[in-house]
Each structure stands twice: as structure tokens, then as C-alpha cells.
Image 1 (cartoon, helix red, strand yellow):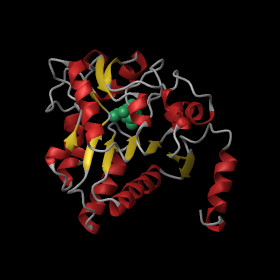
Image 2 (tube, rainbow, N blue to C red):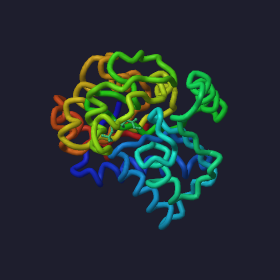
Image 3 (cartoon, protein in one colour):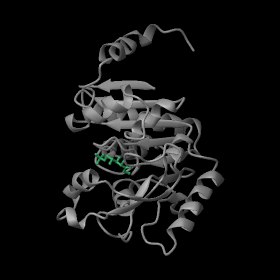
Image 4 (tube, rainbow, N blue to C red):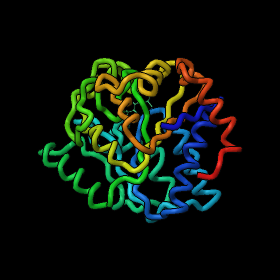
Length: 260
Ligand code: F6R
């Protein structure tokens, strides 16, 4: 796992966006895994800027989103369908038929989840998966005790997550209790993982995920099992890392590192 610490949220988001852009420059038909929530907003803003100002091309890109609330129609302002459309898809030249987001409104959730996994496989797997982290250490909606080999499925949200996400709703009672989410195993199958986290409220979860033991109590700790994972942090999210000095030392020494 590589830890990249920047002074500000904007700076860390720009770096993460540039990583996505370099993949697209090398592989214009890349398959991207998308996350929602507050954290990746600046990554999407930077990608949109690069699309407008530097002709970053999404015409051959396929995307798969991590999760969706159960029970919200796609046009609900708090649905992840709506979020992705408003904050990203409508601003770039992605083909609508290449966008996949779990359905929060289907009659057969189990069949849908299998279908979603099949679509990911059929697309050749996810090249780069963007991830945020919950204050309880979740990735996607893989709440504590989720199996580290889980696949796309229906999950019951933890009370902590409902409380955290109630800031987007009128009150906590309006937050859906269930979600469709990619599993930890689905996420680990992606060829490269890019996690973004900012703010003091993420510091504890980040320290546990990055430096604690691999455990299903902090599903983000599964990133330690992945051969190619990079975690972008601002100073606040990095504030509880014990090995901070080492991460800074690595960054300082990078320019003189041998080609590898
Ligand atoms: C959203 C998702 C979640 C969020 C996490 C952090 O697609 O997968 O795991 O990344 O809940 O949310 P924010 O960024 O709002 O703090």
C-alpha cells in the first residue's frame, strides 16, 4: 500500500484525479469503479476540468459504481444515481450505455446482484476502483463484520453510517436502512485501488485501515491484501498514523529512487 499525504483536500484530490487521467491516457477504454459521498467530489471536479480544458476523453470508458440505497428511485436527489449524474456523468462525454450503478429499485435483488457481477466480469474487470472510507472503516457499504470475500449483495447499514449520512436527509429516519453494495471481494478484484480520505473525522478509521490488523471489523483494512493500492490523505486524515515520518521520508526520497 502506498500512502500519499498532501496538505489540503484539493491537492490530494488533484493527485488522485491525475492518476485516473494517466490510466485513461494509456488505456482509453479503461473500466473505472466509482464512489459517491462527499470525499470524491473534488476528484470528479478535477476530472471534469481536465475533460473541458485538456480534452480528457471518456467516450470509451465504462464505469461501475460501488453502491446504491435500496428504495430510492434514480431521480431522488439523495440517490447515488442522481449524485453521479449531477456531479460527474452529465459533465463528461461518457456513453450512457457504459454506466452501471446498482439498482435500488428492482423486484429481485439477488438476481440483480448476480447480473451486476456478471457485467463487471464481462467488461474485463475493473481497472481502477475509487474508494472513500466510512467513519466505521467501511468501504462501499461493507459494514463491520462483512466477509472479506463478499460479493455484490444487499446489506443492512450500520447505525453509525445512517447517522453519518443523515446530514444529506431531513433526518436519520429518512436514510434508507438497506443498500446494494459491491462486496470486499469484488473490490479486491479490481486491478488498482485508489482510496481518498480527508478531515479529522476520518483519522481514526484511516489509522486502523492502514496500520491496524486486517480485520472484517474495518473492511478498509482489506486494502492491505491488495498488491496495488494507493491511499490519498490530507494532513488531518493522516493525523493518527504512527508511521507518518516514514511516509514523508519515502516521498522525500522518491525523486532519487532507482527506476523500477
Ligand atoms: C459511497 C461509499 C461509501 C463512502 C463512505 C464515505 O459510494 O462507497 O463507502 O465512500 O461512506 O463517505 P463520505 O465521503 O461522504 O465521507
